[in-house]
Length: 218
View 1: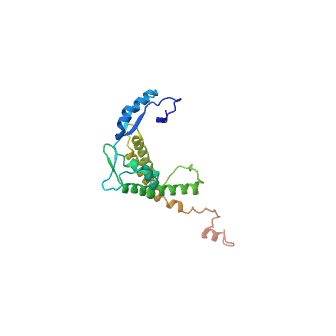
View 2 (view 1 turned 120 degrees about the vertical axis):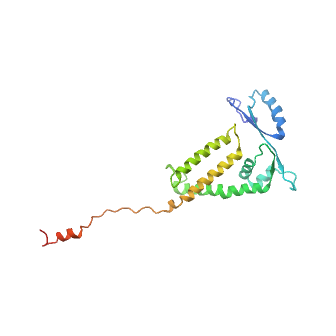
View 3 (view 1 turned 180 degrees about the vertical axis):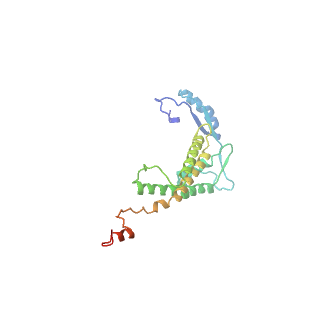
């Protein structure tokens, strides 16, 4: 069914979770199930409801249009802001300065780190993912923290504890951990290679040469 992006010829999903806004709860809780039953589609087992965004007091325009925000800030910034400020259990006041802060966070931390990462992959590995395992000062600590962060992400994205705000916070922490690790170990890239060891005949000691001098030996 197109409404779910589901292939009618394929098997039905084992578990369906429906996301909706609080202001349209009637349509999603009453009208939508009727449409699904008419199409012989399994009803959602869980509903995830968002509260509403409200316009802050003192804003001259009465509405904020998503298309205008996309044009001004871009899709990445708007997506991050919506996930980070997701209204859960309460209404959330929309504020433009928070949207601008989301763009600064992406530019100063995410995009700068990604630019350095992609440049290093192009310069050192020809644009391909390196086959060698990573290493450096603090690698074991970084590895443990990243594994814990992955577990937190799975929980935040899971249906039982869905929390995109938590996911954004965990991803921000992961970027900072990796960026700090790169800065700490950046000197390794500039360290010159050790000189090659050239073997040469050892010089005899002074006492041995004296004994072997003509006319002085035994």
